[in-house]
Every structure is written in structure tokens, then in C-alpha cells.
Image 1 (cartoon, rainbow, N blue to C red):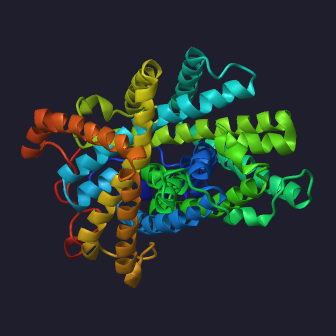
Image 2 (cartoon, helix red, strand yellow):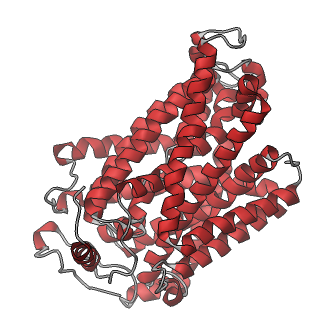
Length: 504
């Protein structure tokens, strides 16, 4: 990545934002490692594997881990498309901006509404159902005390948003540390367990053949078990486009963001596979682990004891909190981006940026309020909240599908930027394969009865978004008072600073 002077940074920042009709308001300070850390932390192999490993083992047995590379390859195809889009439209609220500028503001509104819904459900779910119970357990508390878990989750989410309100640099530092803890808490631990297994430190009664063993639940077909077990990879390997959400705060965004997107999904895919192999060969007893509520902790305790396992749980909790820090940043940038285009209620307030911190504080605050409301709902209606959290797997794939479709509709009209990432002649096969993959992943997330409630939650969220559209947004769009300008065709783009319908 080229090193630019402060003056050059300022000029480039203004050019990249001004090209799309916006004044540069956010502080452009993030470089490659910081932006990679954002994407890597949102993917969070520690969180995804820890929460979903039991599901795969239950429905297919140890062989379920081999569904991970399928998801990794499929999501890499999606990442290639998003990487190319990030070179053309390096703006906050990336998926919304891509959809709105490629197809139109109504299409972008649907994608943006889904993005807000994803963050609002996912962050409270991870903290209330994941981080809080693990932290209480690691500190010797009672994880069955729902009031205690709720209080801990509230404190954690306020901390995560507070870090973002202080500054984007502090959020970046948290996530730089999170990269290290992700690797220590998953890969290093998995390699340690693998070494203890190879060294026969304790008896386990099986060899490497366990990696190919599979089981079926009574009355369940093998195909159905495969579909359900695929959740571990499908659920985990999402969120890498969060790097693009920081596009207006990234130095040399058109070159940095694509690298961060691709690095995050590839590194997560490789390290996740290493982690799964290490933990799986170290399973002391498959039947016991399959019935355990926290199988990775059970495996770790068998080999390392309760003390080191508690330390491991604290690392997992930190990873979950770090995920929430960057998810909060991405959510606020999406709300800010949509409000800047007058697409949301109270857009005049939500588009505000703190003059001193140069962060979208009003968007952060409203995102926190929404999350606290949903977390409170989850505390009062535990079973209903579990259903809502199931939607966190479905919603991002709907967003990916809509974004990839938008890319397929307009990609041939986009200009090619010198030195920027470009798929070239591979664009069509990558698009087709990514489309096939996303349709297959959505089928996995919709067809099984275990996931069916998530579909209704998603449709319910879209129904709420439709209410605002008909009550307020439709009139704004009709009057030309909302929405970004559609991206001009390559042939009519005369200079990088000329746009159609520039709007603040």
C-alpha cells in the first residue's frame, strides 16, 4: 500500500467522497491491518465455531467439519464480487450504497433495512446468549440466573458502543488486539490439543479416523443431517464486507478495502479449518461431546483442566465483545449512510457527525437503543428471542444475494479503474457460481423446519420496513428528496469528480 503525505490523504479523501456527492466528514485514519481486523473480528471464527460446533456434531458427527471448506469456497466467491464493488463505490453503508447506486434507491432501501435488522438482532443475541453466560461461568457465577445474564449483557453492549463513541481509532485498537486473541483462543488452543492427542497425553480410544465418522439422528436422513450440519460454516463465514462499511475512514480505500475483504474470508476459512480439525481429533468421547451444551469447553477441560479452560472462555468472551464493537461501528455507518440520503425517519438527526470525534454519534446512540430494546425483549421472552437470533444466519445471505444480483445487472456498465482490483474475464463465471452458492445456502437456511421461524422473523422485519416506506419514504423518493444518485454508466463518467444529481 502506497504511503501518502497528509496533504495527499486529505485530497484523496475529498475526491473519493466528493465523487459520490458527499462531503468528507468521517476521519480517514484506518490502514490495511486495521480494516482487515474489522472484517476478521466480525467473521469471528471463535464466536461462530464456539456457538455452532455442537449443532454440527449433533446432526452429523465429527465428519460435519468437512462442510466448512464448502462454505469457505462459496463465501470467497461472494467476497470476490464485493471486493470489486468496493473499488467502485467505497462508501459507508456499503451494501446499501452498492444496491441503491447500481439498481435504485428502493432496491437499496430493502438491502439497508435488512442490514439494520441483522445488526439489531445479532449483537444482542451474541452477548445475551453467548458472551454473558460464558463470562459468568468463567468467573464462577450461576449461568442459569437470567437476571444476572441480562445485566452482564447490557454492560457489555454499552461498553462496545462506548468504545465507538470515543473514537474509531480506539475501536480499531480493540480489534487489532482481537485478531491476536482470535488466533490464541482458537488456532493455538486447537494446535495444542492436537499435539496432546498425537502425543497420547490422555486416552481417547480413537485415531485420526474420527475425522471421517458420521452419525444420524433417529428418523433423520443422511442428506437432512448434512443440510443441518452445514450451519457451522454458513453461519460463521459472514460479515467480511464490514471492511467496506469503513470505506470513508480508510486510507487509499479503493486499494485497501478489497485486500481486507479477501484476506479476512480466506484467513478465516483456513484458520477455522485448522481449529475444527484440532478440536475434533481431541474429542474424548463423541457421545458425551454431542450431548454437551458447550462441547469445546468440555474438550478443553478434559485435556487442560478447569483453570486453563476458564482462561480460554475469557478469550472467547473478549472475541465476542470485539465482534460487537465492530458490528456496532458497521451498523452506525449504515444508519448514517441511509440518513445522509434522507432514507430514514429523523434523517436530519441521524446524519449528524461529532465535530470533535468525527464519528456518527447519533447513529451509534440510536443503534444502541434499538439493541437494548431487543435485548430487553429477549430477557422477557427468552424463547421468542432465540427465534429472532436464528434470523442472524438468514438475513446476511439475503443481503448478499440482492447485492450479487445488483452486480450482475450492472457490472458490464461499470468502469475499470487503473490499478484497482478487477475480476476481468473471470467476472461472469464468478458471478454465476456465487449466485448458485447463495441460492443453495438460502435453501439450507429456509427449507429445514428447524430454521423456518427465522424466515418469518425476516419477513416480519421487512413488513415493518414497508410501513415506513409507505408512510414517509415513498413521498420523499417521489419528490426527489431522498436516495443517492444512480451510478452513471462508465461511458458517461467524464471525470472522477462529476456526478449526476449531487445531493447532501
